[in-house]
Image (cartoon, rainbow, N blue to C red; front, top):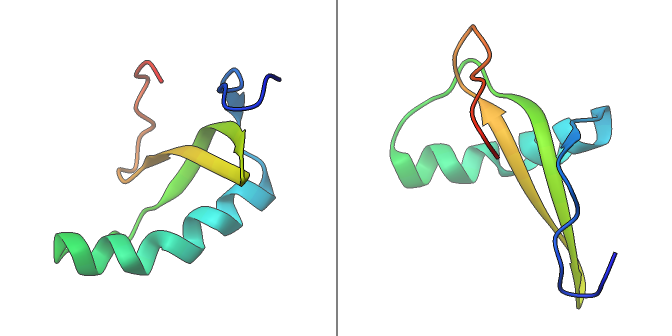
Length: 68
C-alpha cells in the first residue's frame, strides 16, 4: 500500500470490532443516540503518520449491503 493511499475494503476482524467498540461511546454522545447493535463488517486502512481506520458499521439487525 502506498503511504497516504487507502487499502481495498476487507471484512472486519475481531481487532477491527474492538476499535469500533472503542469509538462507539463518542459517536453516541455526538449523535445523542444509543446503538444497541454496532457491528463492524468492512474496513479500509490508510497509512499516514500512524494508521487510520475507515470502518463500516451496521447499526441494524440486518446487514446493510452498501458500497464502501
